[in-house]
Image 1 (cartoon, rainbow over the protein chains, first blue to last red):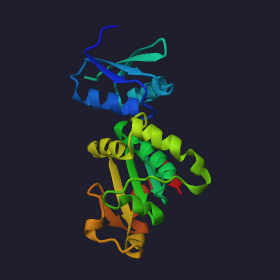
Image 2: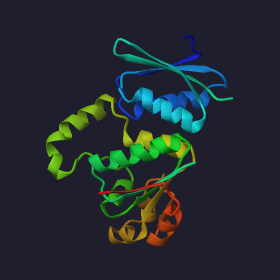
Image 3: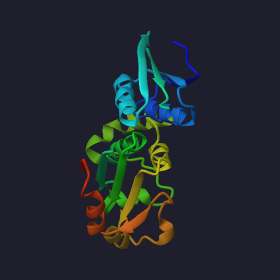
Image 4: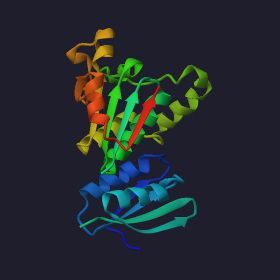
Length: 76
Length: 136
């Protein structure tokens, strides 16, 4: 999946990936897609919960090797 | 949006981090978060404070924690707090009784402290919380 922005939070433990993602999303434009890279096993469910709480859209979660690729669309 | 209120009664690394991580995560999730630092928790609000000790019972893990913090794999409590504060949803209160007890002055406190308040004020702010925790 294409992304407008990439946030690399590999090897960061909770809540590191979410903080990095939230910061990137706060600077992104509506409808842009952010790709979060994380190795924290909690990242997929944390991002799902966060996105639904704050109104962004979780598009996809992929695991490539040990790395999660999590795609979030910024709310409009 | 939901609200979480946490009473922090210890300044130790293993007490401070869980409290700050929950409050910071709540704030970036759009929640309101209220932190009330009382007794030894207030020591964490002293300007320049950096926790280095864990609770005595878990001393054997302090090396592991320090490593995780030094490597940056675990975000520092200050960075989480700052992110939370930047949302405008996270409030930090110092307990007035402990403030007096420990001889704090206006300039003893970190600038991220919103106010020095008493029990009734904090209760008023926390009464409609969805989650309430006491960390000591």
